[in-house]
Image (cartoon, rainbow, N blue to C red; front, side, top):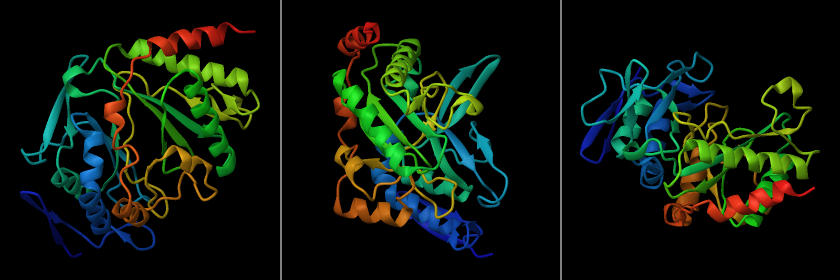
Length: 304
């Protein structure tokens, strides 16, 4: 198979087996690498200083899946690492700080990047809270209405939520946080929001992790709000047919008929960014504490 080269900043990356099909019938490894090179200026601020997990498909999405936490020994020295302690040792995760890293990982058949909700300098203090809406049935209209309900609930608590398509069947609703509390506080807050949503909309939501007991409802998954847990990164490609992308949205886009969790492809995302700014571009500056929201949440949970 052929090879190609992509110049990304100070580095030139060889794309080996460039015409290898990753997504049938015609999306190649080179297509993936070119996408990540072009989306890098928008994507990288969302990855800055965060340990990453790599979801790789060496034989394309029809082949076996590898979830890789550690940076392989053959990765070049210029790729940043995050040394993360674990029981009995440590793990050196990849961190993406430049376009060349994204292109290099694409050449390793890394289709999807999953990021930590905290940054390497304060791993115990998350700066993102994630609500992952996971529908039991493929019903894009229903899951969009569910996302609107979670957004409205968080706004009632005085929070400013941000929305992203998962690139699969659901949405992620995210709160940017000031790094004042640990994972236990954040996870408990998220769990209690999910419980309040379930009480108010029992026909829509469940907090039951076991699929057999969800009764075709939409799971509000808050398990990503734990130490060393990850969620799909903004602008990451998903390992699904047509290569959909996890795409940040403007809040008002939730009301648009055409919005689907898997609507945005690599080509559509790049075209969108060419004419419009990143909907999440100001997120880091809107980080909040949860003190007042916690008090309002407690009052709401106490209501009968």
